[in-house]
Length: 182
Image (cartoon, rainbow, N blue to C red; front, top):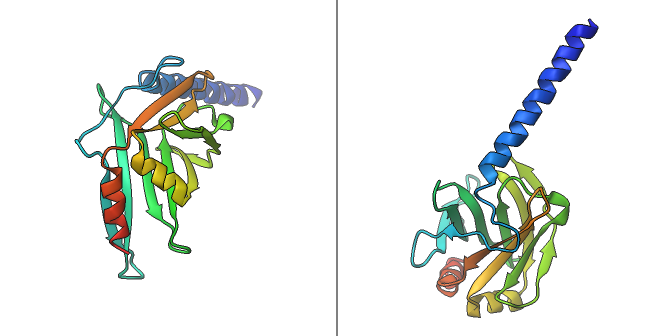
């Protein structure tokens, strides 16, 4: 009985270790070296897409603006930034879909160009990555419309800082389209 339990524990440790190293091998190329920004690939000249769908219970359109950044060599998603309208109060909120391999207690941060850096909590994670969300004040939306880059920061599990610049080119037009679908 003890031998069976020991073998089962050994298998779990081996599986967890293999999963960790596999995740690190997968995430390693995605995350940049310490202090250097990652170089994600952006697909279009206007990387902000407006997507709308209607829910099952209502015919009202639910729209969002998003930008998906992928790793140039593998095509794997590195970061998705989504801005959507809160149905309850009509204000805008930003959702960050972050990669695996992060030190979760450090949270994530955002900064427009060289402006003030704001840290937000990473709220949950699943098989697709980790997620953080924050409401967007009208002042922040205005700054995003006039900015060049939205810099998303995080720490890898090895506590190395990673910054991913997200182009704000086309953001103003995408938000205008989003707002016109009220």
